[in-house]
Length: 324
Image (cartoon, rainbow, N blue to C red; front, top):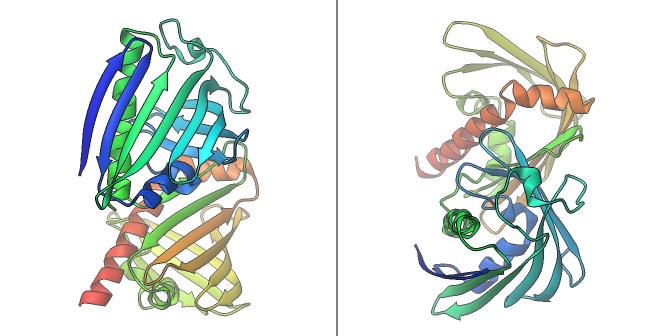
């Protein structure tokens, strides 16, 4: 739960919120790229690119992607960085390379300046945190109203992240790169997560989107061992995948190739690392494609949505195994 107080003044936006989270976590949510990407932007937006050089004089580059697929880039410089307490930075519209561009580039109306100033202060508030956000330089009228709505939707998403109510699965797929990174934190110990990731008897219970059935034809989880999985949709269409394990280091790491048999010759290299978070486990799956075009084609085919459903099913299976 988060309490919001909003005061508008000409050229300045002032928002106060009380978050039910310790100050250290709220600070991390403002400064850690992985956490920023889980709440940055209005409802329905994603944040595929987050680059942060957290120091006074350091720069950041952020991308927000609308539900229609349009990217909005922003950049700025950190003016003050007081860990856990205060963050001051500039904010400008930019292109993908971080070059400042006018707001009209993105169809913004009004007399937007090329640079806004953002100040975030954090204070302890009982067991929670009081955050004050101030943005100066916004033109009055419609631009100020639009900025208010955007920031409040973003801060609503931040509250959900801090309370552990967000979707948890996060993608990084930067334009022009041939890789994709998927991360998720599971409420389960690392040994159990590794077992679910590598046990052929458990794979059919989480691998792939809902509505598909999965059969494991082969799964020899050792360096040099092979695997093959066949999925079937409701109409009976089959989609087969196979690969070879390159590295298996329980319970830390699995490296393997993956190839969709319907498009032979397009091999992906996947590296799954499992990090112990003291009873919880962070899984990071880095998928390297043979080209950026291959990566983009897989995203367009629905790979992102399928991976999210798989991770949701993975989490549900972990819960069943721990509470069943």
